[in-house]
Every structure is written in structure tokens, then in C-alpha cells.
Amino acid sequence: MLSNRLGTGVERSEDRVAVRPHPLGQYVDRIDQRRSERVSSYSTRGGTSAYASRRTSPCDSSRRSVWVSILREMPPISSISSPWRTGPLHLARKPASLSHVEAAALPVVGLTAWQGLVDLGGVTAGDRVLIHGGGGGVGHVAIQIAKALGAHVIAAASGSKREFVEGFGADEVIDYTAVDFAEAVRDIDVVLDTIGGDTAARSLGVLRPGGHLVTAVAEEDSELAAEFAAAGVRFSGIAVDPDPVALRGLVELVEQGRLRVHVQEVFPFERVADAHRLLDGGHLRGKLVLDTARRAT
Image (cartoon, rainbow, N blue to C red; front, side, top):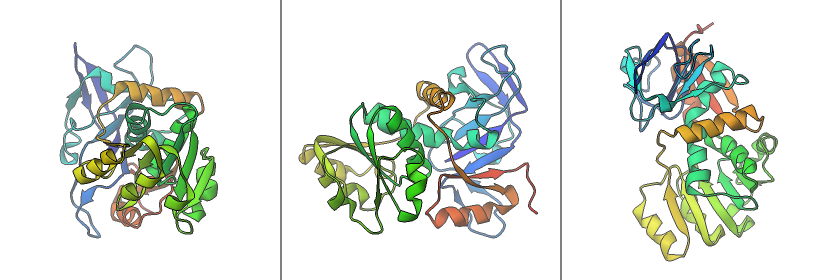
């Protein structure tokens, strides 16, 4: 997925918004690309989300930036500077408290966490929620959303990230490098899996009867879904969709001071290969961002 900060022109028709973009910044999140020192092309996998910066919002007459959440509707990155159109419901006002870099980093991970915990998981106050990958992009945002919903949040992360995830509100932290989470917790209402591998399957035993595993990485594993159903628990996969309600929910949490996004590092576009090497190595804290307005030094 790819999120872009754009913005040289936005104009509104009756039911569509035309955006004439000028690329300013992009966040890095599992982009399929050529692995080379000089990356000449790359393509997005799955959906695409965009952030647009514009002085005048197409949604009202006030002078402010707009947030664009476009998934599976935006042109490929090779034509990102071409005009494109979207429905106005895909636009949300950028929270004033977020920088443009932070706003570029938030939409996809925010929508993934929101749809996993709110729409699919149905998390409510008092629920026990286990978040795998609590220090990652989706994970650290999911911790904050779950806490805003009133849940007791247990985050699985490496020991080196303990203070990091606790800083976002985790009530308990499991150092998966030292402790087997499958032995450390029980009676979980909702598990959010952002890791993949055997994590989802091993989470079966920590769920209470009727509990729910929501995965962002094994959503098409029908055999695993059948195994969970046979055990009397639910299994759902997140396929992130355009969601204006969720976008507004994220904006509200940001404005209330209950949600923030952590950007580990900002790269100039000339160092995109370095960014992907860091991404592929794992163990990130939050997000990486590419800023095409910056030049390598």
C-alpha cells in the first residue's frame, strides 16, 4: 500500500472531486518494487490510500487541508501526477495537530486498525484485546484505538519496544522473544494479528469461547478460518475499504488527543531503496515516510 501527500489543485463537480496532484511525500508500506540501488519503478499491492494537501477544501469554503482516502480507485504510482477523480465522501479534513508527514503516514494503518477493531472485532469497554506487532505501524495505532474503546490492551512486541508500546497505552506487554504468548495469556476477546506466519493459528488457544481473531495478513486462509469455526471462535480478515466514517473517527481521536502516529524516519526519495531495506528488515517503530520534497544530503 502507498499513501501520498499531494496537492496542487482540487475542484468539485456535483458528485466527484477532481484532484490535480503534485507529489510531496509518501509513506512506505510493503510496496512491491525492483530491488536495486536505483529504483526506477514500483507498483502498489492491494489498495492505495492518498493524502492531499490543499489550501481550499472542496468540502467547504474554509481554507484548510483535506485528507484523501482512496483505496483501489487511485491510478498507479506511475501516473500519480495525472488528474484523477474521487467521490467527496473520501475526503476528510486534516487534523491541524498533525504534520503533513504524520498525516501521510496515518490513513492506511488507521483504517486497518479501525476496521479490524471497530467494524469487525466489535471491541467494547472491558474487552481484553491482544495486539500482535504492537510496535509496528498498524499495531501502535491499534493500541490507541482499543484504549479509546475502553479495552484492556495486551501488546506483543520485542522487549526493546516495551516503553514504546506502553507509551501508546498498552496495559500489558508480552516480550515475544522471551515468552510464548500462547502460554502467557488467556480469555482474550479479540486478537488483532498484523504479523502472519503461524501467529494466527497459535492465537486460537488464547481466545475465550466466542472470541474473535481478526487478521490483516491471513485473510484468505480458508483452512484456518474453518479451524477457528470448529473451535467455536470467530475468524475475520481485514480487506481495507474506503471508509469515510472511519476516517472521521480517526480525525476525532486525533483532535481529542487520543491518537497519534509515530514516524520512525523520513527519507528523501533518492533513498527509497534504503527505506525498503529498513522496512524489509522488520522491527520498525511505527512508520517510514518518503518525502520527495527533500533532497539527499
